[in-house]
Length: 391
Ligand SMILES: C[S@@+](CC[C@H](N)C(=O)[O-])C[C@H]1O[C@@H](n2cnc3c(N)ncnc32)[C@H](O)[C@@H]1O
Image (tube, rainbow, N blue to C red):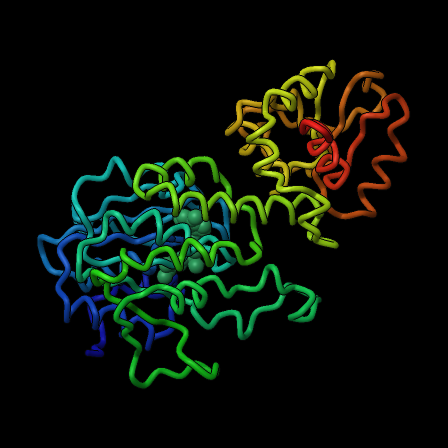
């Protein structure tokens, strides 16, 4: 099954994020299964796309999707820049700047081969897979890259256990949870104790037992996915209510973790936040509308997640996001990002500190003198709970 891919252009080879044996595994699978319609999630420079394009048959099509528009290693390059389009002609459709859940429903047909190589932090790969599954034909082969990458991964300067939530075990979790015929490379060793790449073949049982993948989403997330509301909406179009209830439970557990800043997780104390908002959105809406202005401090992942959640429940969005990072975008989810202006806060304004670092949060709170409505994520969790009837 393994073969050398001699047609991979040197430019693409230079930017390939796979080892040679991994590339041979992918091109060998394409050689064996001869797929006609291939889906690739996670493109980067395009080394993987070029590999697939050079291995697939004439007449086959590759659709590649990346959530970013710019290359994550150097934003002066576009995602996919390393692919010589001339060399491969029209068989390649590249979609960038969109989460797969935003576009899958608009792609015609079903896919018989899929390569997932995206974020590696749970739950991203599992959500990518659940998004793609309704469009994968019976017998389709799914390749997961970096299943073993967590063996060598810790967040800079921290031990594995300190960086546990961020460790890159998303692909391994998915690979081991999904019910499918597993295909492993016979002789690949990358200094890890097991292979860093694997594939599985969709069978009737994959859809039948997909509840296991939904249930596994309840493991702590290392990242609260961007555009979660879009992912939720996309999955709700394809999976039944019981599965979507599991998805909501996963959101609940992880929203509670998030509002606790990942610390002293206590679901009973923080409440079932997602459901608290869902059941009491009217009261929440009234509470948030009662402030003259609302502002977020920090434009990172937590802010984005909350914006997603607020948008999902049609709650008031902040008028401004304060960020001290000069490279911050000018808008996040349509909300303007500006430098902090503590003196401008009025008595009835609300500032929500979306940065989870307690040191930063206490420094910010110390600078706020004009309003008592300055909340950390944890305090905000309490505020939400108190909006619940009887709270
Ligand atoms: C490891 S690189 C991909 C490498 C590529 N497959 C190769 O072999 O050259 C990961 C890419 O996934 C993208 N990504 C991250 N999260 C994603 C998501 N949810 N959906 C699609 N792409 C995502 C990143 O922007 C990045 O370009």
